[in-house]
Image (cartoon, rainbow, N blue to C red; front, side, top):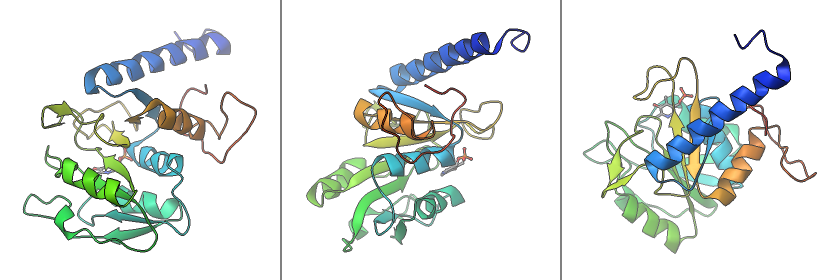
Length: 209
Ligand SMILES: *Cc1c(COP(=O)(O)O)cnc(C)c1O
């Protein structure tokens, strides 16, 4: 019974289980690193912040999604720029428009499918944009033989009980390059990291490492 053991021991158990979970996600998706999170919505907020997206920045996205996608952009103080969806109800990158303060593309996977990620990445490269994937509904999907989670700068999962991989309550994860995930882990822990330098953060995780 975890509540009978002392606080320190309890924290060690949570930490070990969380790290095992993060490792399993990396193994399954092929991602370099993973940060477990308190929800899918929080994952998107932390991903945007980790990529330094904030006030005065614009993020290209779609309106056909759950509320969190746009909400997260607004929550970091950035401005969503909407483009239309295609016949599969996914971001239609052929309608790409470069706006003056555009910093990132945040696309959404729906109905088990991703949009054309290679085309999205080629626009991103040309215009020096970051790419974030809202994969709240697509854990286990793949694109050209590669699992969602390892394809773009940062991928955001939701493990809300109603999603395709459901936890017992709200939960989520961000995957991507170690350099970015280190920053996500700092943001989920009130901005505290391994050094003494504290950045602006939140409380988005059960364990504080
Ligand atoms: C559910 C969902 C989210 C948010 O996930 P939560 O874990 O509920 O915060 C974000 N984007 C999409 C597309 C979703 O379906």
